[in-house]
Length: 250
Image (tube, rainbow, N blue to C red; front, side):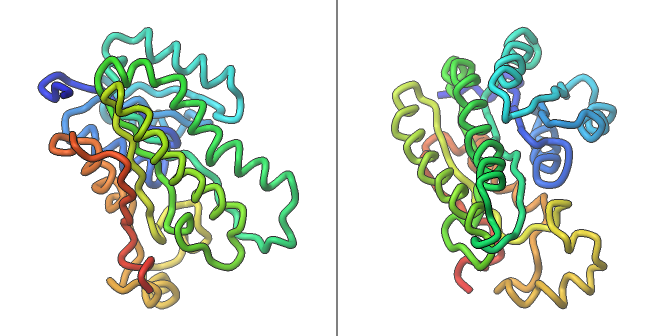
């Protein structure tokens, strides 16, 4: 069983904005250190400036195996940050497009970032997670369980992430590493076109889709991730947690 009395680290991909940033902030609030990873350094540095002693920022292109390997080397070489007890595979791209308008370029881009990038990062960090009996939390989507019009590539790969998570849970249990998946619903992040709308506009256009009457906030997802990774979660593995305001049921 992991010793949560030590100060552990969480590694969060796509950690500069939106859900990833909220997840990093939640781990920091709970007394962990955070390794935040992204393609652009500027958003990551904003978090580091707030808590320089507990944040390590690393630039990484998940579509390039050599970049992911270099990122692992940098984490492993940092004594204050290599006590990795959680990897959150959050990085992803989204584009709504009808299947007839999707080509190989879009499918390949979605595959490389939304699934294979997470596979690469997990493969590299697994030795550290095994050493510290850590856990993996993959950020999928309710679209991976219940797709909607115009999301064929995104939904298919998020469904694959859910299945892969459960396979990881079976295989990694031998080394006391857990794997769980969180499925956000509609969350107010820069990835969506409605992000710049006023609160009234968002409520009018999207609130009615949610049984709970509002779209999600990144902090809602961060709370769900923490519930799968923090103390008290030691017997949770292979779980698929919807954090979606009930939209999966609508």
